[in-house]
Length: 334
Ligand code: GLY
Image 1 (tube, rainbow, N blue to C red):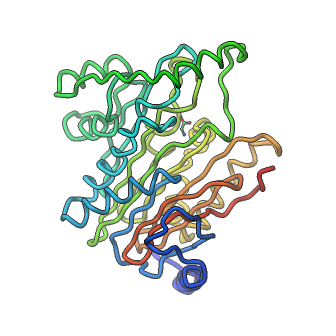
Image 2 (tube, protein in one colour):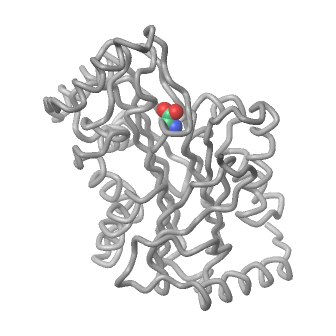
């Protein structure tokens, strides 16, 4: 693997300057800092990156796991589990908004340094789809189980149902039914998947992704989040990427795989995410408010992100950084 060393150093230095001038203090982790294109500690894990503000709590858990000598796979599983258990979250886990028929259906996937992968899609009444995805990876010869079959396998293998009824969510759905003409919404407000990519102190990579998917989707719809190569892709020799946003756009372009392959060809994480967004943007007319975003972590520790529209941020945690980072973007949101 040959990276452009000069480009890497330049980007790394930009990151250093950005951090020095706009750095989040660890005591104030919720403010977006402005764009950071790399980490001054590049090459030195641990590094944990997660999409959106809910990534802060996920990163904190993953960091704790890594500091207690847990594996990076444990870290990415347990990190996003915290968000799955936060029933105030309306786009991840059992607190998520339902599909148009009123069912909360969940998708997740996980992948390790060596490319092993597990995924689960279109499941109901399980608190931790990410743990189910990992169990499928580790205990079956398959990568992905879906729907009733996945639920049956889960119950046979120690997972239990969890029922969560949130009156506010039910009421919102009933209000939506009155005006929606039963039509799913695919827009900029409706996409806050948590994806996490991480590196441990030995340079081992892993990633995870979990979501309740697009609110008021057609019953049976599955987005990018459980699809290896779309919502997440990890190649320990090259790097990792994960995605958030309108899943159909990521599936059509194998988005996360594209980002990793571009890094393999020598692009920086920022450049790779930018090119993947450019390819998606060709299919999204101006003014169509469909958000997509990628975060990427290269095997040497450099990281970056990009979104189609402004407003995407991600949580970063390293030995010297903790906070939310605004991703670069192609289009200004009105
Ligand atoms: N990115 C989440 C979804 O489209 O379901």
